[in-house]
Length: 356
Image (cartoon, rainbow, N blue to C red; front, side):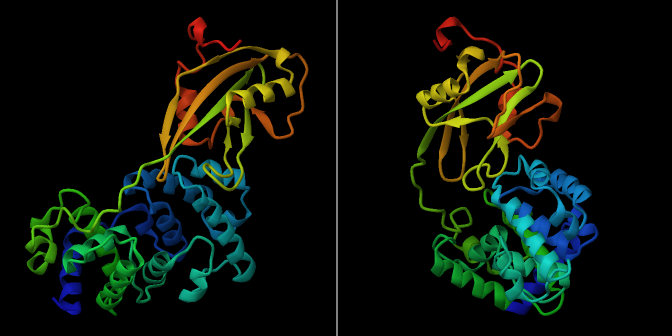
């Protein structure tokens, strides 16, 4: 199937079965497309929808986003993960406001120069936001093209990626490239799925190389496996009867960058040293709760929460953090939020788990 019949088959399917009522499709402009595309990286559509709606209510324009306090932005992003995405959003909004009078630039080179925007996201902004012809290559499109053309190799390898981009560029039509790109994303999400693809409903089944070879379940080639390393840390849950919970802002780099979270330590000795520096005599005896695990894309984080209560009468300055009342707890990393909402977390355990 050549490029024109391929695009026609995909568009005909889209006209009947494609998604046309997602929140970011209702009023589609470059800003809306940009925000939705960044959120949809590594995140499922159904997860993104409520985040997107809250985000757009709070930051309806580039100017609102550029001028918003970063803590407010991070609070609205908390739970989506990959927090560098949120930091890049703000950096890009500030740059657009400063250099482009708050209007999204219209040329690919400029768009790709903005923080956090790569080739595929730029293509989505150009095609969906500006109605220009531009190719995209997100995970869904990679899967459709790799199966249809029978392309071997993990799409993360540069050579395979180059072949897929060439296919995407040649098959993207001049007319209706916005609908075509949306159709390809929908086809990958709804029919040519990662597991158990619904080949019987595919509009390009007739000459799909993977289907003809019975390899639709093995293409595209999976990422080569590797053992996930484990990082072990200790986290302090320090509560105050009147001031709430003590939190510190995490550094921009690393996991949960820029979010408020629990103080973190590499060892129990480091935690004990911290407590001594902050007058451990005014902390009620502490206990250790059960180890928790959170898995990131590249490693496992095992963290052991340690609970303590500050019982000093006077207010103490905390140069690296602050007390937060329970009603104001928002924007925490999802695993920490889950930990604090667990009723067992603050309940004293048996005596053997007490720290001397």
